[in-house]
Image (cartoon, rainbow, N blue to C red; front, side):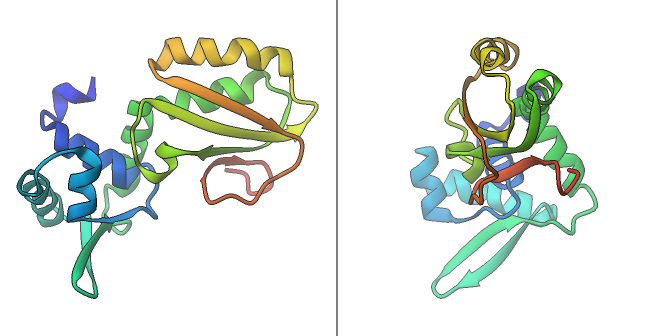
Amino acid sequence: MLESLITSKTRLRLLVKFFVNSKTQSHLRGLADEFGESTNAIRKELNNLTQAGFLVKESDKNKIAYKANVKHPFFSNIQEIIRKYLGLDKLLEQILERMGEVSQVILVGDLSRGIDSGKIDVVVTGDNLNENYILNLSNKIEEMIDRKVVLTLLPEKMLSTGLVLFDKEVGA
């Protein structure tokens, strides 16, 4: 659906890369390798997004690193749209609805680094988690969002380099 609004596939991939997790940084060559596209196509879109203020550039030795501009007035709106596009809102809703006493929901794997591989890896921590429900949940979510979903249950909270989608203690 978002593809009809943002017609450039490269631009959409860049928005996913930088707005799923605002801590993601990358440089031109790394993006070209990751996307399998020419540096010219990537450079054009990076320049467009930077000129619009959605991305910021930082010099890192001989390379220029790009990242999301978290101070942009539309940052949270764009991040929310990208997360909805990926189905993360529906995934979180389904997990919290019937899963049990959920402490955390953490996005790990490729997508937490802004790489849309079509697979969503999620770790769910908490007490008395409904393991039977999780078996059905993965298939249900996959049908809803048209992406492969891998859910991992852990009894204890974890410190992760992933992206925390929900934390009961923080209230978010």
